[in-house]
Image 1 (cartoon, protein in one colour):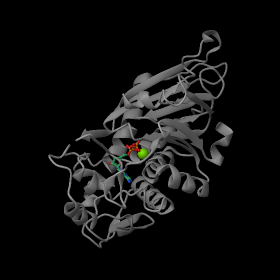
Image 2: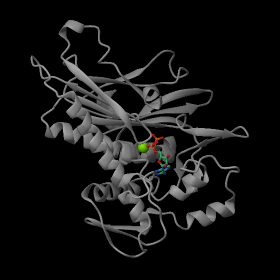
Image 3: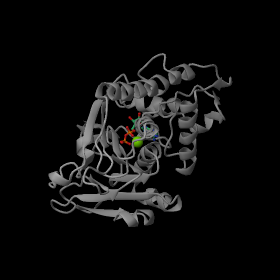
Image 4: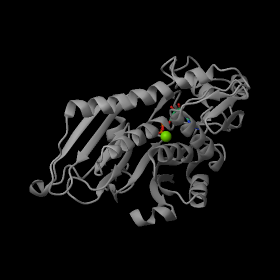
Length: 334
Ligand code: ADP
Ligand code: MG
């Protein structure tokens, strides 16, 4: 549901059926959402796929990622790390070590906006496993919770890490993207060069679409921006993520509470940024940066996007209406 709102693949609905290359779709459930994989044949060739084996392989890859990174699996590697003794180094699997160090890197570059230690705050605001709270948290409660929040309390060295405080890691802001990358790598290891992989709105694509040209991906635009207009970008060999304030929230006393928390204030974000789309080499990076820029808001977010040379497209509230903006690195896709 969320995914279809966020983006739509224009290529598959192309009208030139006769010139279309053979393509096959695989889908399933993972990480509380759905995944989609489209595989496209080489020009003039057919796809020779054992569908059952492919489906099993994709599901197994994702099950592995979940067993490493999910907070919904009590004995996942991440949850065991979350219970590990403070100050004691823990050896990590290569994928978890990679995600933790990428997260750390993006935390620093986003000036603390992206922070995988934000879980206690996410839970207090009712977006964790426990669900919506009876009451929104008070200042004292937030202050107490924030003592054990902060990416700087996580130390990483090669393939080991340790907690320097009672921090609790939550990879929801990057794991879907990482899952997409894992599927993409798997497909490449099997020799596939033309594909699109998507989990819950995080997309990565490679090579050519079924029409034999670049993949055309749409970015959903609120009607108020330009009536009926939908922005489409033609992409290949890249990942794309969109975060927005309309995606995951609840309302209480006329206030809107977003599932994205500003780790610096302990509170859900509240600003004029309607949505932010990020293009990056990997889906994990795009995913994390979209969350980070969503926290930073339009102005700060664009400043950091330019500094970090990120390809970013934003939809921003201005007065009664909406405007769109993009970073310099997004210019080629404009
Ligand atoms: P979005 O597409 O809106 O960015 P994601 O699913 O990528 O949504 O990330 C949101 C999830 O990440 C939240 O449900 C929460 O668990 C976690 N999260 C919230 N705020 C932050 C933050 N500042 N940094 C990292 N993760 C966060
Ligand atoms: Mg994200």
